[in-house]
Image 1 (tube, rainbow over the protein chains, first blue to last red):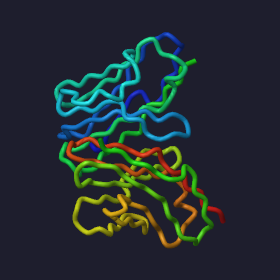
Image 2 (image 1 turned 30 degrees about the horizontal axis):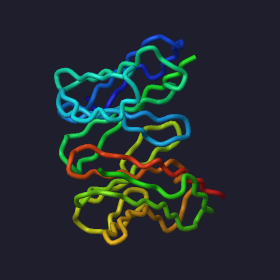
Image 3 (image 1 turned 180 degrees about the vertical axis):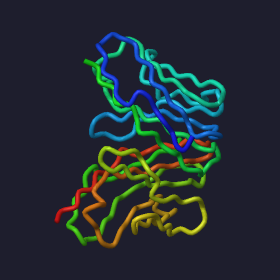
Image 4 (image 1 turned 90 degrees about the vertical axis):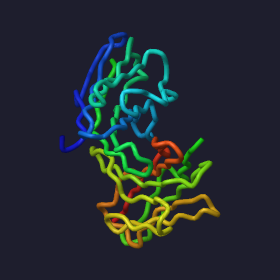
Length: 114
Length: 112
């Protein structure tokens, strides 16, 4: 595709529900990244994929968070038993996977947990 | 491990004044360094990057940054601020792996 796309653009859910966020990277990009951006704050690294494997899961805040990637393409970030502190914009980015190549960001999914 | 520190979460300048946004990095190997900008209600986009070529890097919209190894810095500057420069700016570092770590961001306000 022309750019990184994410869906849904907005998600409102009730505390305790599970949510699934989707990211479609730029075609051919082997590296894919998830970040969280709380209101008025910086980017918090969550997880990074190279192909379908995740060499670095160190940023996942708790075991309620998980992510997978299939076919070296689409990735899904799942948050189980959502809490109010999970409310944030979740950003996805992709890159060619070579060091020094920029990351291209999607528009984000705004998650609100009531 | 690689990391980035951005000094000053908020910077305010007058229109036409010099913009200076500070970034210091930590890396075990020669780093690649980036500045991204996030305009209100928009996604992040690349401003400029350093990849071990010239130490003074020019980016879009008149911004530039200088890599100073001795100071482990990569400060972003623009000689004359414009109202349209108001945004959040993020410094990022990539070392021996192909991942990237971002600073906490600096919000730039431009006063008329």
